Image (tube, rainbow, N blue to C red; front, side):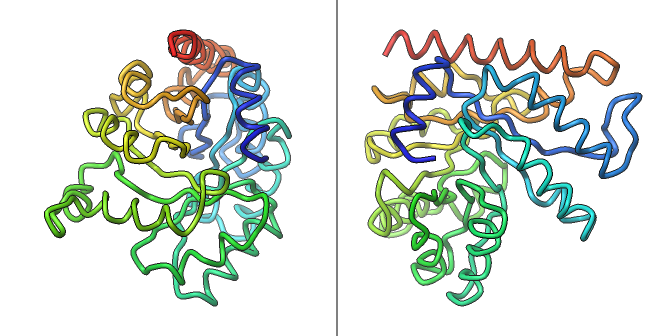
Length: 269
């Protein structure tokens, strides 16, 4: 899914919502078997319920990889359920020496055919270059993340500049706004405005809305652009809106609420 198609879908649905499929087998609602087959059934119901309101789905690969071959098959089946008009993201946070990254890129872009993958940039340009070599795919680089531990390295001063800022400025020279996004956490809303000023043309993948305390309004107030420019991720607040038979209905209601908040922000641009 290229940039033009993503922007078109944002405008069509008046949404910036990315649904995170961080599916935890132990949290599957009553009536869904706690198996990989149950995970697929759950994901199918969630996707069908939220597809009218989402422009993207993010599959957190760790939740699937932990189950070995069965988990990998579950991830493949889940990917097939994501509508073609929604950007599919492998939240894998890969990044290694060049030839290893080449294999990761083949796995997620060729074998699985995800539209995008999250990557960790701290091994440098040669560790990310293989991902940029796949035309029509997106590299989503960690920038300023929403977890508490981000302060351990990302916000440290480097040449009188926060390290994450140096990283993002450097990585932006390796790609372009048509193949590179950045992860910028919703719980860092106070920093989003400055980051947006430095990177006005790039999309940001923004985790941390919902269960982690971030809000659509704060994110949009600081980082929305004339083309949208945001994929606002919500996972737990949608997936586990209910643990009963009405889980899909409740997930739909939560996705609709977030979409409406996105629409309000898009109208005000």
